[in-house]
Amino acid sequence: MKHLIDIKDLSTDEINELISVAKDIMSNPDKYAEKCKRKKLATLFYEPSTRTRLSFEAAMMELGGNVLGFSDATSSSVSKGESVSDTVKVVSGYADIIAMRHPKEGAPLVASLKSEIPIINAGDGGHNHPTQTLTDLLTIQCEKHRLNDLTIGVCGDLKFGRTVHSLIVAMSRYKNIKFVLISPKELEIPEYIKKDVLEKNNIEYIETNDIEEYMGKLDILYMTRVQKERFFNEEEYIRLKDSYILDKQKLENAKEDLCIMHPLPRVNEISVEVDDDKRACYFKQAKYGKYIRMALILKLLEIK
Ligand code: CP
Image 1: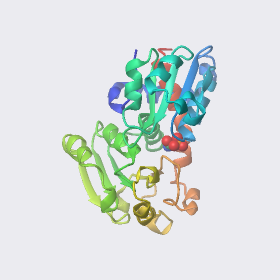
Image 2: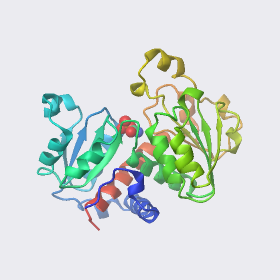
Image 3: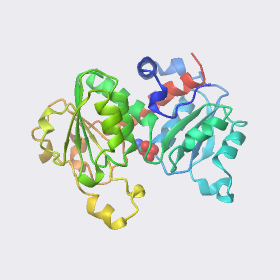
Image 4: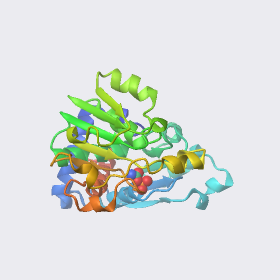
């Protein structure tokens, strides 16, 4: 049985196959409408979510399956002290596959050790968010028509932003990828991503705190929110939260075919005036998330 806890659980061939299936689902939705008939997806969300939970649920429904679960741990027996392991053992008897989001790093991994059905990590603390990364890869493939030869700017909270960590890990497998890492000093990318991922794979990267400095060189600009929920000190959050606000003026030197991405939710980091720019891809990106999750559910349930 296979789980998806970390994007590294998937080989490059498997990622490419998921992208290919997701594109086929987009083109031929009827072909997939009953693939998961009588199958059930449980969404166990111990932390808030809009896109991930609802796109998983929509994905299972569009495959002809059903969904159950909780979106607020306080409404489950977790509030009485039940452990993740016990919850998962019980839910294994009610569903065929579980998508779990948890504020503690490693909780979905612990769950996978006890589960009798596949577990999908739908985000664990500041650690990983592999299905967001699959969403991002599908977006890049559909919008740029390639996963190689890209200069990618990632901007904002690179310290706590789990989507950024997983994206860098995934993109480091492809050829001729360069990163421009844009953040305030306090929210720089963790040292282990620089050493164990970028430097180990000989990926060229530049660190800067200026969003405009390299704008004209970027093929992709991946904006992120400052992760309020990961700060211990509110004053520090307030000081850093508006470090970057992307607006039309900052895009003046950007390429005509720049792809602007954001995992969402957005707070202030992209001005709404950018939404009408043809380069704004973040709402399309959220929609791509449903298709790649459909492909992932089929893969983990071993449905052809
Ligand atoms: N991108 C993302 O994970 O959004 P949600 O927190 O709304 O699921």
